[in-house]
Length: 374
Image (cartoon, rainbow, N blue to C red; front, side):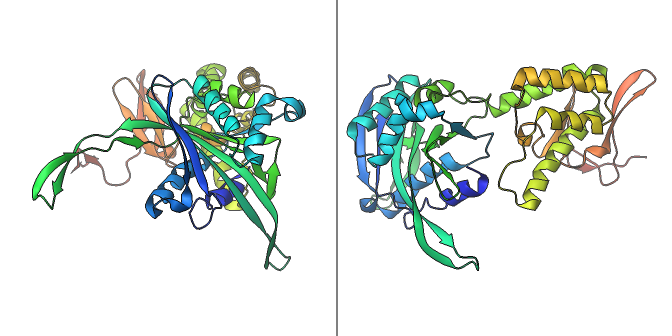
């Protein structure tokens, strides 16, 4: 799914817009034992609680493809005969009414999830009557129905006691929520929503933690292997750049690479491209050439890139560019510069001593006090 299609599904997670009639799931304790199963009608739930449940499940469609969201593609052999695809298809076709299939999914998640503490598994089925439009933009009667399953796994934490004023008794008393449902740690949507319909060869997987994709769960549910997590991609890319550039790894080069990656993101936003612009070995190499890096350094970088990410490896520009600000650290000082303002910094050697110089054109404050620079 691209960003436009993800947003289209996200907008459905309101009680008055979705066709989700029921929410089922189970509560799992820290010993990985199911201590409660539930199957609630969404229509019979109080309005506020129903909206909150849908809001939690909607979070599995948040973030960016290649960072929090990953496309999982099944091979033809998997679609035809694999246990993983057969189970997902059964859940979808029966609209979660096959209790054995639902329990099988619970068991797969519970046995493969490496976590501590209690958690809840939530499951919902939705039928989306996909609208179509005429050439002049007039909305037509729906001709396609997208049937899909959404699943998420949410940690559960014990509520903290809070002081409350009890009006009927005219007194203070301590109150405590029994358990609090946290935002989903992981989840998935099957099948993927593409071109206004279902792509049974794909699923969309969500992970909250950019450093941990829960590979064991992905293997158990989909028989697939994800690319390295987004935070690890950034760490790996930074290491490749540093090792390949050696003494040519200057502030100017790093600043330029990050600026070009941010430029890719801005261009996508301005052109309203739904498909993400991904960074490949070739585009990353061209970034270095643009900086005037010697060709032998570029070749060394591309070789290391291929070793780490694969010959056709692609990474999202957000996994390269600094988010919001550039940060420069020494053992004693940390300097943070707003995005797009990196040119106020430069490095220089004066009398054999290395310096980071900051151009100070405007007002300068130290601990909130205006200071003058003579």
